[in-house]
Amino acid sequence: MGALDAVENWPVATAAVAVVRPDGVVASTGPDETMPWASVTKLLSALTVLVAVRDGVVTLDLPAGPPGSTVRHLLSHASGLSPDDSTVLSPPGRRRIYSNSGFEQLADLVSERAGIPFADLVDETVLAPLAMSATRLDGSPASAARGPLRDLAALGRELLAPTLVPELMPEATQPVFPGLSGVLPGYGRQSPNDWGLGFELRDGKKPHWTGENNSPETFGHFGRSGTFLWVDPVAGLACACLTDRDFGEWSIEAWPPLSDAVLQEYS
Image (cartoon, rainbow, N blue to C red; front, side):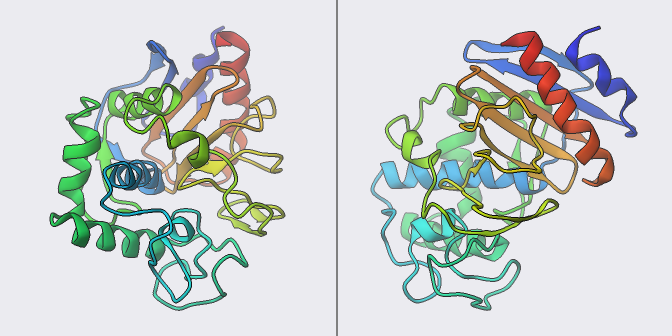
């Protein structure tokens, strides 16, 4: 029985999963249909912002968001902004508050400085270079991307073997403002709740949506639409998942065993 066979028993109507190495997809199951990425969108938006940093459109220390906050704070959910509006709940750098509004403010800033809509910037600087031709951002840069498994797998391959911003990825996938505590959506309070520059870090978090055997260096994101993408640079693997059932108890139970089986079979 292969690692991906378990996906057939998930309580979902449609699920698509791919295992990726630096040279491409090594295994997949399920249809290649366009589905919503939900918060996995943040990986796409974060990469777009990092390309903007590479190109000098913004800097990581440029003021952005609430007073005292910067691009770095917004990317790492450390600006103090509330999850879904412009309310400031904490001074910057004090707490890890997962914030969709922070990503929206960040995208507005980058768009203004680049002189084009953020969705067009995503298309031109990330989707086109990575040949992710079937994916679009149509709405919030925090949650509104839609695309098929092949494109999510292509994003995983890029994050596993960076070509767009290789000089920035080491910083982007290490703790930024390390040691901050906060709530990991769906999994409760974590202390520390470390994040990189838009990438959620596995570290020693428990419980977590990745597997028990994922290395602490694993990074990625999951989404409310029952989606995830993790990248384990130690194992040299990424795993991408799209489903048509919202995140819930089923995914909390199903995802970690799948991740461990993928690591055992393909590492």
